[in-house]
Length: 248
Length: 68
Ligand SMILES: Cc1ncc(C[n+]2csc(CCOP(=O)(O)OP(=O)(O)O)c2C)c(N)n1
Ligand code: SF4
Ligand code: SF4
Image (cartoon, rainbow over all chains, first blue to last red; front, top):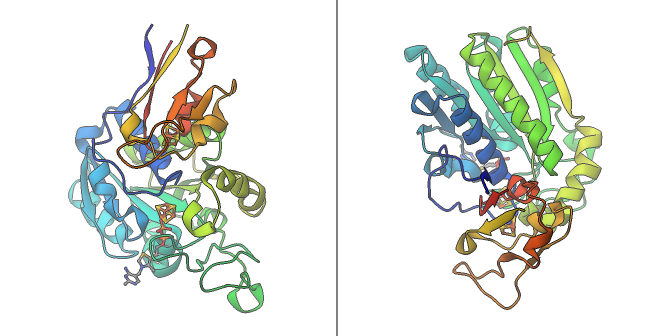
C-alpha cells in the first residue's frame, strides 16, 4: 500500500488551539499543502491577524509575522516590497478584514500589491466570544444581536468578494467553502491559483473561504457544516468573481 | 485494499470525518478517552475502507493518514 494522504510539511507539529471541528484547521492545511506543492515553503512569509487565527504563525512551518488587528495587508505590503522574491500572504478573519481592517485591505487591493489574501469568513467574531461581524447574516444571533441581526440598523452583510471584484487593482478574487470534501478540493484549487497569480507578478489576489465557528454559532461541528451550506452559501454565492487573465 | 491511521491523541472528537466517510465506517470510540479528553475517532471495519481520503480531507486537526 502507498500513502495517499499524510500531513503536509508546510504545517508544524504544534497542536492547534482551535475548537473541535473549527474549519480554520482545514484552511491552514490547504494553504500549507499549496505552498508545499508549489515548492515555495522556504520563501513563503505569512502574516497572521488578530482573531482566532492569531497564533497561525505557530502552526505553519514557514516564516511568519504577526500584525496588529486589521493591519496584516499593510505589514504584508512592506514585506513584499522589501522582499519581492518571497511569497507573501495574509490570513485574516472577517472581523479583522471586513471591519477594523477594511481600509488596509481595500487600499492594498487598490494599489494591486503583489500579495495573496486568505479571507476566512465565519460570519462572526470568534476570538472575542461571538459578537456580530459585518458578515453576520440577517436574523443570525450573536452576543451583540441577541434577537438576530436586524438589517434596519445593522445594515445587510458585506459581500467582500463582490466588492473586491470592482476594485481595478485586483487580479483574482474567488469565494469558496470547506463544508464537504468536494468544496474543500475546490477551495484548494482556488488557493493555488491565488498564489500562482502572485508568483506570476499579476497583483493582488484574494480567496474568501466560508468557514464555521461551531462554538459561537452554538451548533455541533457537524451541524455547523450544514448551517454554512444552507444559510451562508445562498447569501455568499461560491465562484470566481474576477480573473484578470489566465496564469499558467 | 486501503487503511486509515489516526494520530489518536490529536483527535478532538468533532465527528467531521465520520460524516464525510461514504461507507460510514468511522465512529467515535466511546470506550476510550484520549490525552485531550475526547472520545477519539476509530474505524470499525477496515476491510470496507475505500481509501478515498474524504475523512483526511475534512479533518481540521490533520489526525488521519490514508494508505491504499
Ligand atoms: C484594536 C483592537 N480592537 C479590538 C480587538 C478585539 N478583537 C480581537 S479579535 C476580534 C475579532 C475577531 O474576529 P474575526 O476577525 O472574524 O476572526 P475569528 O476570531 O472569527 O477567526 C476583535 C474585535 C483587538 N484585539 N484589537
Ligand atoms: S471560537 Fe470559533 S473561530 Fe475561534 S477557534 Fe473556536 S470555533 Fe474556531
Ligand atoms: S475529523 Fe479529525 S479531529 Fe474530528 S473526529 Fe475525525 S479524526 Fe478526530
